[in-house]
Image 1: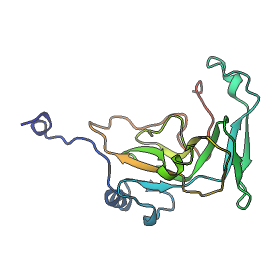
Image 2 (image 1 turned 90 degrees about the vertical axis):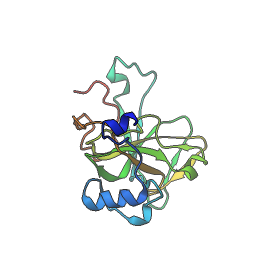
Image 3 (image 1 turned 60 degrees about the vertical axis):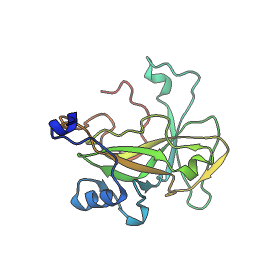
Length: 188
């Protein structure tokens, strides 16, 4: 008998598309405007929102001084003309979907077809905390100038089953976000 059999526990794992659909129907995963057409074998496709935020007037980011990275500017992504992302700039783009789960750990990543075009949809923070409720902030960088449009399906979410007791849900500084949120490194 292995460790897991003796303790009558199961290991965490990734949800299949079928199980994602089941957990949505049970209310354990909440995805705004859920559409079964976005289900994959073990993930769910998500789309970007309609704004782009960039940091302004950066000469150097001093992690001890939030004033060096507090200025941002937000642009609306035009439905017809789109918005051109340029290499060398970090773009904060909100997901177009509000998501919530207190039972699973969401993990976002770019869709492989997007990655093959040199588009990275997050620099860090691909894992969401159990209990996060809100809109994701994608941290997008491109290799080539790239025109994007609102509601483009550029990333996907996986759901991991946690191993161990869920003793605490996320209640941090990004909880309840409704759009792209710049760094709150020193926010309380």
